[in-house]
Length: 177
Image 1 (cartoon, rainbow, N blue to C red):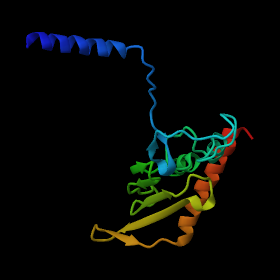
Image 2: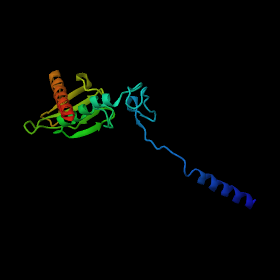
Image 3: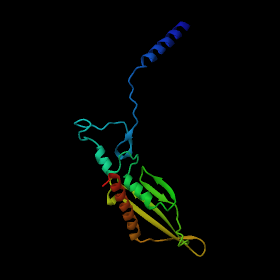
Image 4: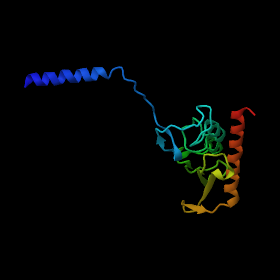
């Protein structure tokens, strides 16, 4: 019985040693559709320099600001959003879901008012409908409690426009045009 175990162990060692020179491809998953990781490779009809049959090619991704960014939303919109609200403290920032939530901020001029902003980046493309912003405002009442105050729709649109303007500046700066 002991001889059989030695024989099995010796056979196992030889089997493992035979695998030593095997070509093993180590590859990490890349972002696929919807930002989900995938191991599938893009198929190009005419080789590496040909056009992409399924998915987006590198030129399209670079133009949209998504290449190499590691995030599932447009990188120009993401960076522009963070730049635009950089004076406010962040409560949460999710680059994969495209959600930025600030904490309450009181401007030095009006300490009895405070603001909170939620920004949603909705697309991988740099488009005017690719970002939504919502501003919340509260005022300190006489009893020391914060009360919600409605904000005008124009304030939301102005914030979105400021983000889009900054995103265009970032894109122009990245292409050198």
